[in-house]
Length: 101
Image 1 (cartoon, rainbow, N blue to C red):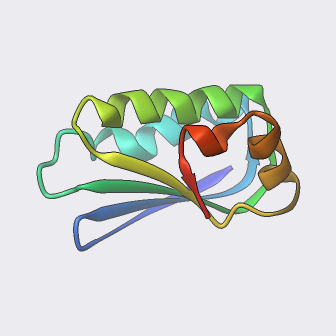
Image 2 (image 1 turned 120 degrees about the vertical axis):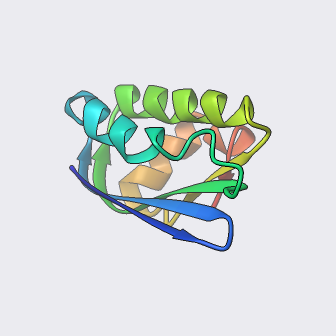
């Protein structure tokens, strides 16, 4: 998996591409960890547009991010969810936990 981070107007966008699975946990955590605690950021967006596969460990990583961000009273949303990725998120009822676009 490849990650990149963009910041603009109080929003951090973590863009992912490739396979989002257990082997990605260090890279995913490293992408957002240094952004936590920053007062200028109000929202985190995980852009899954480039992800072609995700598994249950990826779902767990998203939940962990959600919990950490919630401690700071900030929002997390999932963007560009398509195809199989969207299907997995729908089956896991992530629409009740995240704003998904």
